[in-house]
Every structure is written in C-alpha cells, then in structure tokens.
Image (cartoon, rainbow, N blue to C red; front, side, top):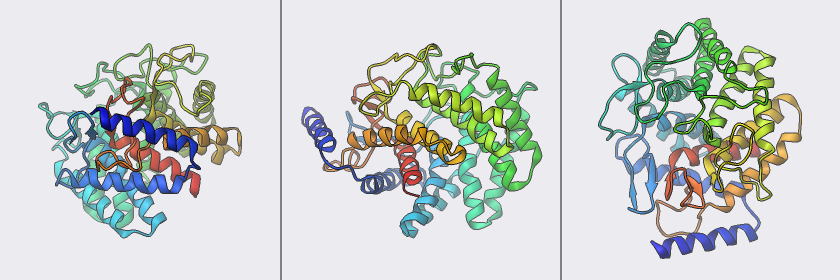
Length: 372
C-alpha cells in the first residue's frame, strides 16, 4: 500500500512538470472504463476500484446508465467501434435489470436493499435515450418511456420528488434531482412528449425556491447539506442549465450561471476546487473532489458555448489540467492506471482511496468538449 501511494505521488509530481496531453489522458480514462466493465462480467460497469483492497466493486446501474452516451460520443470521436458495442451491452443490461414498476434500483448490484430510486432512474434514462437514438430498437424506447412514466407518477405537484429517495443517502429531498429533470427534458425533446418537459420545468422551478440570493442551494448534498460537495453542486447546476436551454428559459440559464460563477470564484491556483463549499461559497474542505472538478469544467464549457462568454473557458481548462495532473498513467495496477481518483489527496473525504467510474466518465466528457 505504501509503495503504491509513493508511486502515485511521484506520478502526480511528474504530471505537473510535464506538458499535459488531454487526448492521451482521455484515452487512458476510456481504457480504464473498459476494464471496469469487463471486471463485472455482466455488461454493467464496476462502481469503483478500491486501492486498499485492490478489488473492483460490483456493477453500478446508476452510473453505467450515463456512461452509455459518453461511450457513444467517444466511439464517434475515436473511430473505435468497440466503444459503441460496449455502450449497447450496457444499455441491454440496464433493460434486463429494470424493475417492474419502471424505476432503477439504488446502489450497486450487491446491495442488500433492492428498491427503485428517483435519481438513479433519471441517470439511466440518458443511456436508454442514447441507445434508442443510435439503434432505433424498440426495447430501449420502451425502457425509457417506462422509466419516465414512473418518474412522473412519483413527482409531487410542486415539482419536487419526495418519495423513492436512495436508502444510501442521508436526505430524502434533494435539489440535485435537477439532473433527473435534465433527463426528462431531453427525453421530452427527442420523443416529442410535452408532459416530460413540463415535469422537468416544474422540478427546476421548485429547485429555485431552494436558492439563496447568492446562488447557493439548500438540500443539495448526499450527507451534509450545510457543506455540499462540488459533485452535487455541479449535478444541480447542470440540470438547471440544460433544462433552461431545452425549454428556452433564460431565467434557468441565468440561475445556473450564478452558481457556476460562484464556484469559479473558489478555484485554487492549481485549478482544483475545494471538495465542499459552505453557504457563503467558502471552502469547507482542504481536499478536492476530482469528480466535481470535471463536472464544473463541463458546465463552464457549456456556458461558454451557449452564451458566447469566454470568461468560462479559462476555469474549465485549469480544472481539466489539474485532473490530468492527478491521473496515474504509468502504474502497473490496471485498476489504477488511467483512472480518476475520487479525492485529491487520495485520503480526502469523497470516495477515499477509490477510483469511481463516474469520475472517469465526467473527465472524458470534459475533454471531449475541449477537443470538439
């Protein structure tokens, strides 16, 4: 264990000195995700690689779902059809394990509780929608519509989701469910189902009732609502932004930009963001949530592209450069090589000593936006 940590530390130092190659880093992250998928033997993607045990976790339906569109985009960018085939295997697996009511189960496949949850269902919808657009196979559309109808039935009149929260999160009401609204709005646009878009708009309107004048959102963390992770802050901001763009609602876009600008103000000189932020947008953690860095890079690039304001680009580039600097590219352990750590340093408070699949997914998305 000490030897591995020493090697990783040395690698980080070398990355900071060397010219950073975003394309090579993205390729390494994509290859890491293929190993994470192969590790489960199911079509689903392992939730993470644990550095302490040197073991892959069980397949994770939630994040496998939103890796699907990433693999389709990466296949097109790279010309490697293997990634398209892998994405289709993921989508078929997700349909196989969809719960009878239409929802997607909480947690990993070895979780002791098998219950549907709102957030996970929304994330897998991204995958079914992408697979249906790629293939036209009715199976994927059927799974997508079944999931969407379940979400609509579970939504309260004010737009919030208060039922079917994850049993593995501390809170039952979450503003980061705006990322579920994003999935509904995207499905509504592609399938031409107005009721999906209307449900998404209701959720964003509810979420904005949770926003303080400085842009900070209440009820926006997995465990500690007073100090939310940049990971969940980014989930919420991305949902508000994308629903705003789909619905052509400038107030939503402006709200997302207010969050994005506040987070940009916390960026450190090395490009990292604090892992947690308090209600005054002050650092509430010394470590950095590497996933959150990647997600914010995506949001900043989306804002730059959609608004024409190039203020955002420098922040995105700095965040991506930092993430590349903490990626281990020359480590023998295949569970580490090319992966993106949950926290930096590794002992930090989010996914400590683990390499989560969603960190690699969002990193690839951020680099694809940079290169295309």
